[in-house]
Image 1 (cartoon, rainbow, N blue to C red):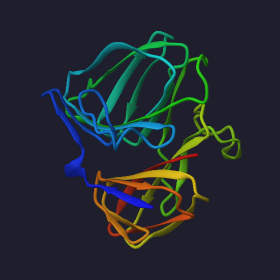
Image 2 (image 1 turned 180 degrees about the vertical axis):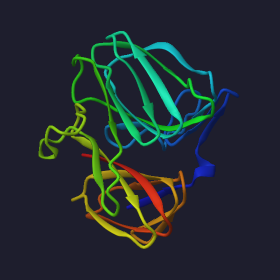
Image 3 (image 1 turned 30 degrees about the vertical axis):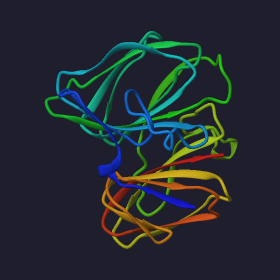
Length: 230
């Protein structure tokens, strides 16, 4: 089953410094039909103005994957980690037993990013943080973060039977991704694609439930992010 979530029908928060669109229920936006997909709980599309951001705050028991689409975000946390994740990079944080962190746009222009929250397989895990580049080999899906053993140790790990994948596609590229009935949520970060015959516009979402495979065709030069869950 395929369900489309057009960008203009997502939840919205505009606080001036932050312009956020919510694919699932989050903060003051509540839709009982959009409470998550399996372990996938949050997918926020954020634009953060220069010199602003999220001051130190805490998280527990959540896998948080951030893909920076434009600009950069500067991270500090209570584990002593400090780093700048720029456009085209992926940041992975396991909140685990508890972590305090801040995310600030220290750049001269807006920062635009996807932030994805995935519930961990169990509570009380050790917190951790790392950042990696978005793979740039065109025409195929590549793993950005994973908790599946078959994806090996060379990708950022999340503590869940799930994976985050990304692809840079040229117009006309066709990718077949086998799901075997697992759930998936797909968003074009830029451009537009057709998935199993359904057109998906830039920053819109597509839910796939009980599909054997996804046939993804690029209608223009595009970049997509996909979360696959059990």
